[in-house]
Length: 215
Ligand code: MN
Image 1 (tube, rainbow, N blue to C red):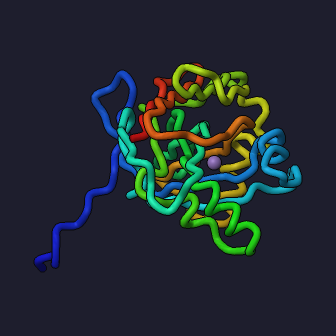
Image 2: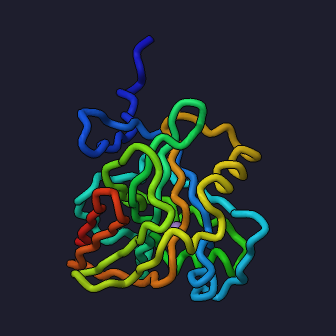
Image 3: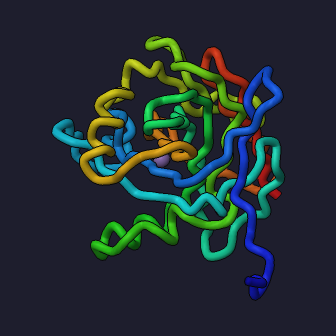
């Protein structure tokens, strides 16, 4: 039957050093998975279970994009994160580094009012993810975010409160993760605002970097 309009195509991520793309389905995100980041946001450090929010895959933009400063905010923040890419059976297929861009002022209002985070976390251009690598990162891999070449965030993955297997096990208690599902695993300390003209680069040892320019 004809469609009312052509269906929008879901995004795909490049796979490093391979003639392959990774078709994206859902984007699950973890909050407060680094103690120092929880503290810098004025939140308690909770270690019993992770908590989750989601982003629409349509919010994902390609690596090295130019993002117009988004509407509705005066406080757009960077968050660099390890991204897990699930494959068949919902197991970890690969990984990469990504940016969870956040309208921090909208998030602060939502948090204070006990309201959802969607408008703070899920908007066009709110996720950027670099090329994926098959397998898993080294446990001690170090993640970094620079803005105009200056280091703003830097931490080893060993600082994650909930590691890769614990996150996946917890996600499985709530959803049926499958191929194409991504997990943005939380950001270390050092989040902060970006301004038009800023050039962001996220790196994680062993993966291609992710870049974003704010216009
Ligand atoms: Mn985040």
